[in-house]
Amino acid sequence: MRSHQSRTRFFVLTVGLVAQVGCRGVLDLSEKDSVDGGADSGAESDAGTGGDSGDGNDTGPDVTSGGDGDGDPVLPPDAVDLLLVIDNTSSMGYPQRGLAAVVPSMVQRLVDEGVDVRVGVTTTDNGNPFCPTIGVNDTTPEYGRLRATSCTTRPAEFEWPHTNALVEAYESTCLDGCSEEVGSTWSIAATAIDGGADLAARPWVEVQPDGESNVVGASWATALRCMVPQGVDGCGLEAPLASQWEAIAKSSDPAEAHFGFLRDDAMLAVVHLTDEADCSANPRVEALVFDQSLSDSPIWTGATVTSGACWTAGVQCTGDGMPYESCDVTDVNYLGEPVAPIDDPSAPDALQPVLIPLSRFQDQLDALPRPPVVAAFAGAPAGYEDGVTEIVYSATQGSTESETFGIDFGCEASVDEESLRAIPPVRLRELAAANHGADLAAASGLPRNVFSVCDGDISQEADRIVDLILAGVAR
Image (cartoon, rainbow, N blue to C red; front, side, top):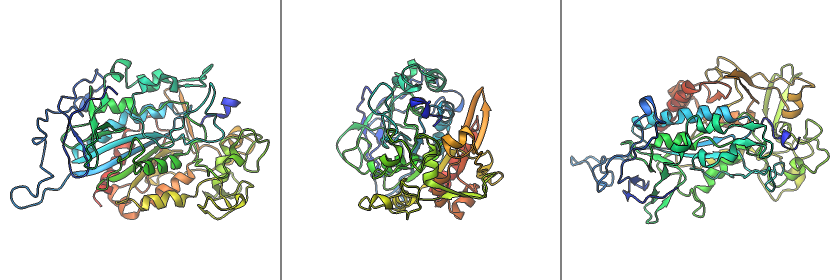
């Protein structure tokens, strides 16, 4: 968060030619995707430029036919639906800039390996009674909805508070990789999905192995650099897991704009970017803990609502705190009492966990057609993914960190005069670990799938996440 306690205390649409590829319904562009405004460099300068597709029959193997002419069936390419869940609070400008810089190269590697990639972006803002939605300093929760807009169209999102801003990140986070001129050149072309006839601009970027994409007016790499930065004005009680759940659920809802994002023949890969503890609040009882009109709560770590309530509602530590021996997921009610991790909205308030149990998120992932890959940039020290370092859980009794966040930082660094600090990600860590079996760990060379959000340059970590995704595809 960093911290919203200080808030109250801290597309021109182009219709191209549609070529049905299996059930994917991806677009085969009829014009070159050639304008990059100078934002592309190095190996990425030509990434994502669309080729002349003619009638759509000369852009690769005919995956709709019965074979390759020799009697052998021609299979569609591997497919990955990449979901980025991005913390959009006031401390996240620098990490967003870092992610925006590496996502195009991640996609390029996957495409080079013959993978058809979709990239969808949402935020950790899933709404919370703590965060106002009416007024000058309102937040606008995404609730897991995908956003495929240029950061240059949303400059106000890079200031917080909206009046007398203490954080101004538009130039450093958005314009660093997406100039205003470039940001206005691209849009998402209209496509059909799942064999349907309806054409619409979908809120995601898709890149096929032959380089074709649904981006027009600029390269897909440019579009991704402009799309990833999500601003710094989101709700300061971050809910990455709830946003992940909502994004997946909405993909199956025909009423939602990103209906069809997840494909039956694709593997879901989720990458979280956050510096806070998960605060995916249970709607049934969230107002009993997080409403700012409350005068007291057993869940609070200080005198008022802070994200420390998210820590104490979801984590139980053992030991004296200097440091703790371990910190693990727990479930408590609004009175601070341990309860079973039920997911039943009809149960009495006293039996309701304050945070949504992890089982809801895992059940949803288990129901997907293919086992997913989950990774996170979060509050772990560098080397944690390799088992070289461990997260240190320290109470730092009496400190500002202890009251505001419930725990001391899991990683800290000073990079380019930016102070990067992040809270240990216990709930996110456990869900990530549950989806990282020994076979996947061995195939990817990654003992763990949680990386440090405090690293200034995450290019190597991003490359290893691609290794993880490719290992997942190969399962």
